[in-house]
Length: 291
Image: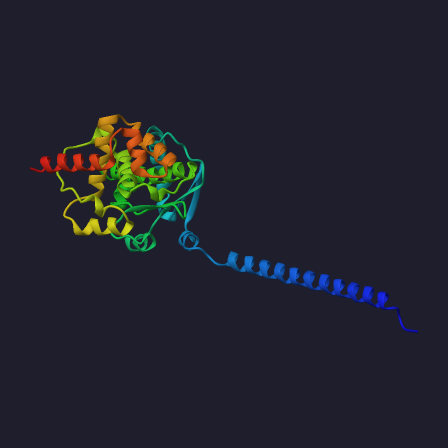
């Protein structure tokens, strides 16, 4: 007896639906398996920072993890002491206290730290991507003995790099990109925080053109092209701002820049003068000082 057409149609539709459900279930299972395998594979792959810290001792203090060679455990106390100084300085400048985890890694040699950072002639750097400070202090043996001058330079180095960490974290808290701030402001605030306004001196230097201080490549080129110190210039730019408007001006410029999304507008809102006018005034002052 032949089945009725309607019944045949219903069975056909039901069969197609069932087959479709089986297909989608199987596909979902394959995707799940692939996802799990991918996750396992990625877990097995070591990041450059993970490779770097393998074999190093680790000490945790508050929100930071300190990585150092076994024979250099004195770096733990040195780091903690420098951190306490850095927290006080950065709070007074940025009015912000970060609580995110931070890795501090002591490098074994100068070549490795330069390769990791991609920058030549450095003793320290901060990576926002890795949220880490890399350090290769000068006069390592003397520093571990806590001799006065090496200890002073270590503290300023540490505070400079920690200031970068606080700067980036405070900018992220505003939910804007750090790249809207020019590099002279990044480096100038870090350098000024490390040495403080009270330590300002009347050093002579040639002013590097401001158009040469925009990109990372510009900055690196300026370090070798011009017979002057780009960090010193950036320090004095912040110094001049603080002399004119008080130490709160750094925080105010950052806050106004975050509101407007542009550094030139934020600068003008905070200071009442145009950025180009400040740059011209600064150049004129230090050209005169250099006679």
